[in-house]
Length: 274
Image 1: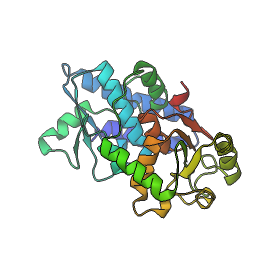
Image 2: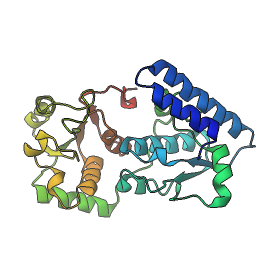
Image 3: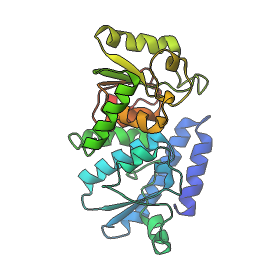
Image 4: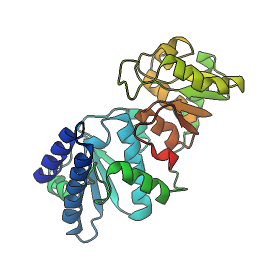
């Protein structure tokens, strides 16, 4: 979707990040500045476009929701358009955003040039701040803007799943990445058990909403035992009384539905702590 110069800088920023994070951050901002200058050449564009980068990971869908909130506050009336290219990490979460953003698998050909000119660049969405800084700014600016809630039918499904798993309210939804996923982002079984212990003492039930293999799934009821684990994970995360997660995009689901969130590790300094 992006102009070639922006796509090239974006690729360089991604490649530089492991060894040169500061230089990588600056490259992301430069790409965003270029995108903003192109967009600003249009008089109040009424459409802004998002590429599949905004939905190909679960946390990225959470960032897309943050962008929707931000446009709702800063640029009301702007039509938002997402091109998924079939790269959707969690269809259930993305479907919840449909009232606020128009979605295409592939954009109509007549919109391709417009999309390149007015794209919302992922690495620097406002053309000023790196995305890790922008999300914190947006969180402060969007306080009180809550667009998502579960429908009555979804609430019924939640009750049905809880009943099937033998989970009583109030309950904690706990999510842990695969134990071998990333030494900086996963959590040990002992760390998970330590995090949920105070809630168990207070009488909370516990269910694992994690979709990766992790020892906690054998200690508490797990959505992986169900026929539709992705749907159950989404619903139970959105409806929980407390969410305890690891450094992973899964926590953006309960955050989006205004559930209390606690992270066992947080290398990316999530904006819930703003």
